[in-house]
Image 1: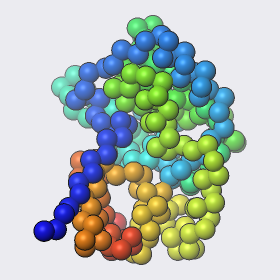
Image 2: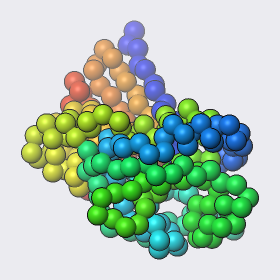
Image 3: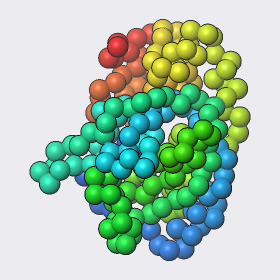
Length: 234
């Protein structure tokens, strides 16, 4: 009998804020997260879209997901508000500095620009040559400092993340820099380009894998650790 393994990966940043209640983070956990993470120099593990931070022109939004897939802000009628189009892509291995971890409190929510995901935790990053801070929007469900660290590790690493990216064949490296896929990519290259999937269905005897990203708008199919095809193809 063939055994098929289903892995459901739940990167918190991929969970719509409208579906889950906001977690209450104890002050001790907030202090611990700030003490551990703020000031760290990290590098991007995957390619990140960067663009306007909704209605706040003083900041930039960074995400491994296409902006049109993000569900971080809604109207009163619970209709999704999509941020403006991304303006650039940061390739894997880009150095950044974690400047601040900011958890939403009543005072901060009131202080933040209304047309932003005010009820989410934010991670402020500094990027060389960019005056505005980049903001990673974290899920509302994070409740501990460890949750924050694990979530941050999805996109930002402490080691030399550039080495694996630079070791890719030229065509694959160029595709990752555009957040696109090309046939024959290894799993790590697929993750660099499209970010980590939400779900993996692994058929070990057949050596095949089917990866799905949030909303099933993107899928990738691998065999023998090589990318065969993907949807959408653009």
